[in-house]
Length: 132
Image 1 (cartoon, rainbow, N blue to C red):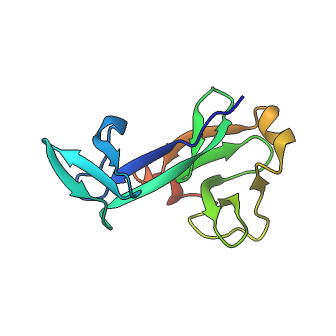
Image 2: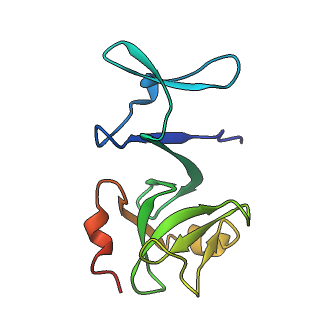
């Protein structure tokens, strides 16, 4: 079954998620979003994050930028896409953890429901302030 590719978009200026119906793609692949019926081209004020196509233990879809708790390792981790490695990783405090755990290569950890999304870096950045 093909789940497709899903994205979400955070508006840095408005500090809110864009509704998927507000995101448009034209024939050449340019991304646009609408605010109060006005059309804007995606700029640096919009952060696009892709779904991992994985679910946490509560059935919540896991996206880049999500803050997750692991049942097998203390601390909180940020889901990050590593372009150079072409894979997702878990970072501690918004930077690479020397013992980074990668997925979806670690399917056993995911299927055992060991991940829990507890927030994201946009709406809940304070969660990482006390992260050990």
